Length: 265
Ligand code: CIR
Image: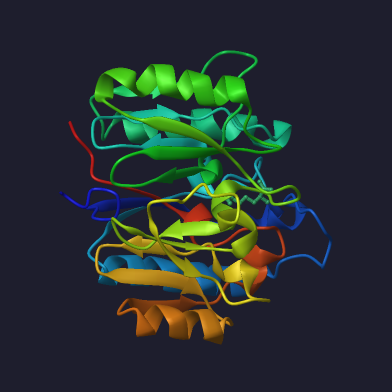
């Protein structure tokens, strides 16, 4: 066991653009405040560095309002990286913007390229033994099948699962805490997709706390969910709370804000 699903050397982030106010959202609760988002983003990066990450900060991309959410553009594995094909038309071009950054770090870069394939990184949960991919409004069966084909010779085991209806991404509702343990909402875990894993339930009414990340010895979670935080503390995790009020207005959370990986040249 190498714990490669949560032990990493690197992270990539992208600075939020002023166009963030045009970010996609399921429900309009007002526009994000850029200055406050930048402060939260800086705290997020400082915390990743405290966890041991070499953080590569990319410049803002004004033409893509949602481009701060770099997770959706790629999947980074131990053996190589795969450029995604986002299902949101306004985000399709973000994937090509990420490619050169990963090409310079990885010897093997592959691309989801079929015109009918759609897949976003937010729908992908990598565990120690398998890659779970949730079908959603952004990720279709063709995208999942293409990912499975592209990664088969790396030994990847891709399992198609379902994102709950009305939930943006699979990982909106779950996170890997360690090699055996997943933090999840009940509405997702009730599907049985995590049978065999140890589960920590997000507290009822705190569903937005499910999108957390484990990076080396730290767990980064959105601030404002005290009952879920206390469950993670009781389970022994070293938890850091990061403000997420502005990203939350456009359906973003902890995992969306970075790619986390150990490059293999
Ligand atoms: C979107 O709708 O695509 C963005 N507003 C939010 C993306 C969040 N990304 C993620 O969960 N991985």
